[in-house]
Length: 398
Image 1 (cartoon, rainbow, N blue to C red):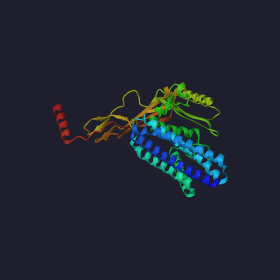
Image 2: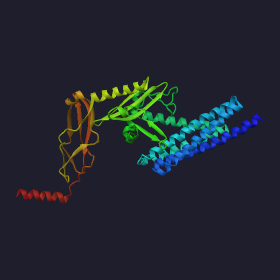
Image 3: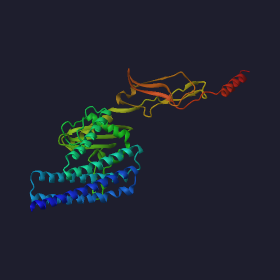
Image 4: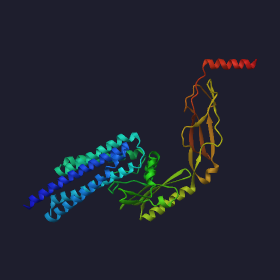
């Protein structure tokens, strides 16, 4: 009789988990569509669903506790209930994260179009993993569970491939969570490389990392930035704090002054205050010791003559927008520049065509070489233009 009652409650647990999984699938789909389309009405549908997920978590937690107290399960039955408690915690976090994404949508103006397909695929993969995980639990399907684990392994493999592409040679990921695991390692240098990639190619991140305090879920929760530099350090722009028992208190701190942005990485700090103090010390050292110097000379570059061109000369300009070089402040006054240009080029000249180069030197050491290119295209003279010029020359000679 007791076993029959236990089986009934276990079946109810399965139904509740399936319903919670369906809510998670729906909230992921809504949040991802809101993010890619910028549709704020979709974003506003997410918080109520997150609250439904929270209620479902409490209901399932109460059901599990009743099963533990009244039925006192052992062995496999105990493991199933313990697994359910862990699952609902993870699914509740899915709701929270979807709610956070929806909150961000309200601030964003747009998402780059090239990200839409990737975000769509990520959402589909996440929905599939939630569905398969719940099905595997309910059906006790080991093969399906291994399939979900395989998706995680594939994602971790992609993380490691991306890390190698960024030159993060000291990094090896074992899981996508960042939690402690054997062989899950990185270095301060690699964290700096990853931070630089984020700042250079996703500059809008500063809109969020520079927020000191904010509220979420219609003001129900107040959040304070764990990076205290944002409030107390001049020019702080971010970026990310972290903590695990093995890594200690960590931070990738960024700050910008006079057009120069620095990254300071602290790992294994014993406490939050030490983490902040050490990051501040590194940033202070960087700003007091180094400066950005423009490679371009103060005087305009000499135009390059164009033979048989519609224009007699073309203006050389730097190929890259950023022509700054990082130097020690003490050496900034002793830098020299050399400009090497073609004496003449033949028309037609294409915009962006290489004309020479500019080098910045510290003594005999080249610090930076900047290609110099044609600012605009120069067409070849037509026969009519050549004839007109010859006629003018003949008239003036007469």
